[in-house]
Length: 283
Image (tube, rainbow, N blue to C red; front, side, top):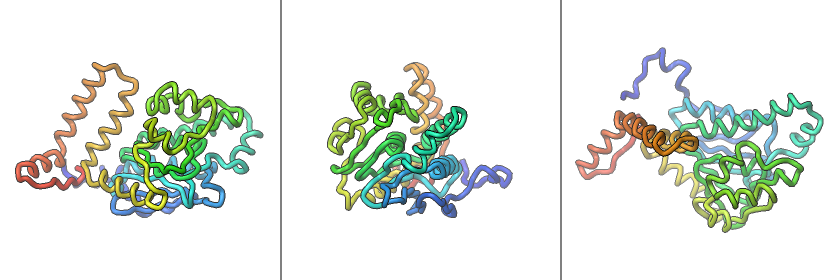
């Protein structure tokens, strides 16, 4: 499988993400790792209608980006994300008609779909407040690093809504279990950093002053791995939620056979034979 593509295939199917300049959050690339920074620290980094849509569009575009191999989500300052902005989202929602409300809730769900459809592994680096839609973004990531002082809250019930927001009732139980997810979604209470680690919501805990470096370093390790293989793993993890065991085994047989056609697989074999470390190129 060659990295060289015909121009008619390249057009519209591949693009670089380095030149992107989002208006509603920070974006930069550090050695194949894309870093998204929710950047309204004075308000604990809340989301707006515009930032929801722009995040959705970014993750959709990353499916076509060859210059990003892993993604880190983080918040500026001492917090991750406080959820939807009370004044810029919650207030306007109380004045909308049902069709407009459904347009909004489908848009927020599309952000989760875009994150799950994005082939690159996504790591959320969570400090301080991680609430509402912020907790959903963390949940929708592939991996999560938290701090001991962080607080994760799916607080929809506390504002008179259901806990079933943006896929929470299907995804959260698969991460921490049905009973624990039920408790968080019914009560809206905060989950401490130590609790999140013990329950499996966090993969790791880091110090607040080391969180960014820890997350980017981990993402860089993933970025140095077999990009095509990682993308296939992510796709299978997502698709197999709705499969029986026999169907999943067959799907994985097909997926692994496809991966065996990549140059990265052949590089790994050649490196093993030479007792060297493989250098993956993503093809």
